[in-house]
Image (cartoon, rainbow, N blue to C red; front, side):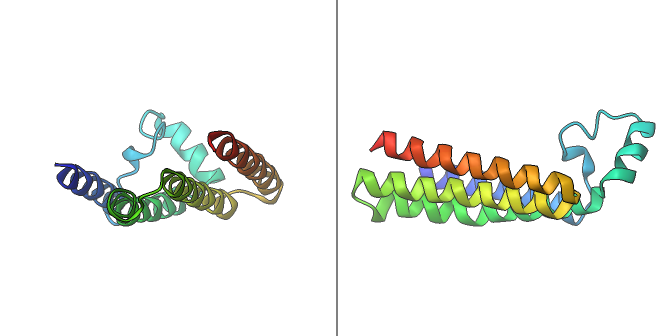
Length: 134
């Protein structure tokens, strides 16, 4: 049963990635679909919605491909609870790193410094949270 659920989950993210990257389904981006045409025009001047959709689509593809791998490793190959925690932590950090990469690619120079700083804080919090679990 878990295999079917993971396959449906991965298929969902793959379809979302396809819709964002290939079909330009910008309504999937939170908040963008509720903007008025004037707000969308102003937003598109500041940010490139095509780039945002491209990178979010890549993130969805990444999740669709890696979730079954991580779940398989977690369920069948890792016998230790510690190794499961480490694997899950690495996976979460990889997604956070991907989100930081997206933010750095899309934002201006001043905003990039803030994103890097916030990513550093998130990394420290994750490390301390991981240590506290052990």
